[in-house]
Length: 168
Image 1: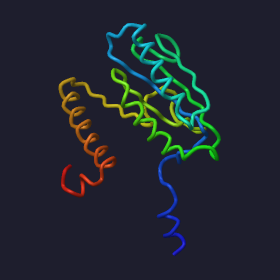
Image 2 (image 1 turned 45 degrees about the vertical axis):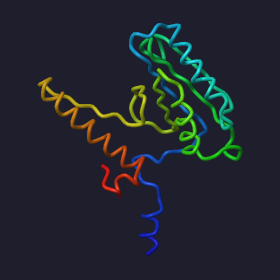
Image 3 (image 1 turned 90 degrees about the horizontal axis):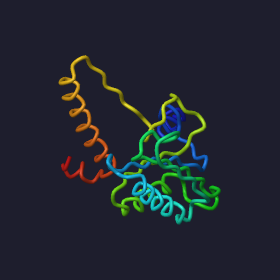
């Protein structure tokens, strides 16, 4: 009986997500954006992040070079206030996502910094999927199928009421 209760209540996943009070953020704008325009967008993201009551301080980088590979991307690093002074990480990320939606022209990707991480690649997301094929046409078909399915699953997770109503 205790084993069944533990199975239901213990978080599951490859590595449990921990809250160490740090968030890594990647920004991305149109490929043809100028450095000056990208810096303006990046500054708006940094300002929005800095105004959040859960954030202690922010570092921001934009342009080509480490840690960003292209002129249309940027990186931010946010340190949050101590846990006793802020909501849980999931709530902080949810609140920030809503704020970032109001900044046109830039996509913002956030992930909590983890003590234990696999892989050496920098990424905009927690997970990466790699498709490979010797046939470009076949890979294009399968990548479209995979993306369509991931959109449905993501939408069902974010809006469960739609799934229950038969929307997706």
